[in-house]
Amino acid sequence: MATFNGISTPLRSILSSGPTFARFADKGVDTTLPRLLFCALQGAGMLYALSKLNSMGLLPTHASDWLPYGVFLLRRTLWVAR
Image (cartoon, rainbow, N blue to C red; front, side, top):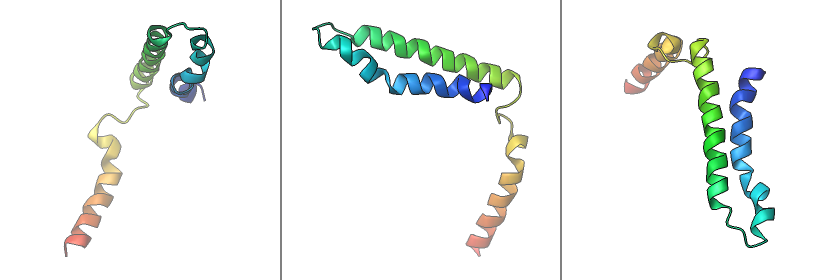
């Protein structure tokens, strides 16, 4: 659960940054730079979580991780090609 939250929480924060910063924009304040900085920091947090997942070996980064799917796709393409 914690591994999923490391990716989903920054993504949800970036997607909901519009309404979060909208209440300050009504007062004539330019919120473009703070919003970009907020999104950059959230993106950095997501990259950190992805690097931790990669260091634990939870991301499929090698061809052997996809081997069962490759056999299925090969059989499917041979069947379609006939």
